[in-house]
Length: 281
Image (cartoon, rainbow, N blue to C red; front, side, top):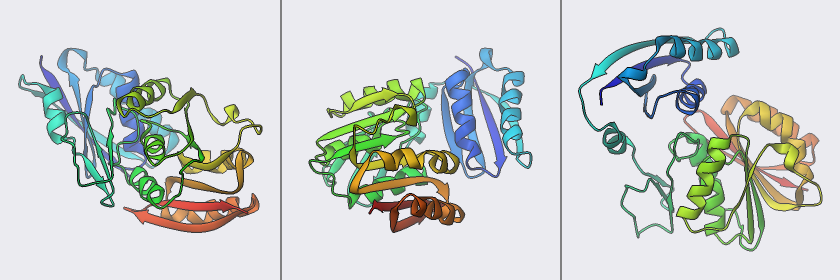
């Protein structure tokens, strides 16, 4: 089968690379992506490429941010197995020497404590993005053994999987996207962990069900909007770990958390992205 390679350049790159990848892969015919320093390379069967569809996806992003700069070029590639090409370029990720996040076609590593197998299928959460890496890093030092854990915006389910592998008594993973919901369920089975997957948003949270640890790797606006709901189901002394925002957003998140009775614990940064640990006093 012949494929087109569509090289899309974005300025700024984040968070629009992830949004565009989602649009092209979830709703369109694109089936593999490779991140580049200035955007993405997206692969689509030549017979299914439509510039109008790509232009409409880009236009949606520009409606979000009128300052966004975007351009693309299209090259028809010679016949070859593009799943194989994607596998070759999709690298496994070692997080802080304790967690190995890999696809099924990567070899297992026995020199790390936690081996997590993720088939991403366009869902967010492979540890390549700085925010997922940061959340996994914070989870390394978070005691979840015999505790109840909630993973909001779970994506591939990678955070929920790590929590389960670390001995959590109960783990619940919620995502608003049906594709991510199905993908996470497959990944839970693949990793042989017991996680309850739910399709929906913060409206599913009920105050008669409480958690010791809440994980939320979403984005700044949703975190600010829904943090009250997370705090409402968090036990006293419980921990809220959040990411999905830039370093310059830390103050806004800390202010919101303080108003809700959360104490600031620590934050980590990676490639201008940030993650914070809060504790409910």
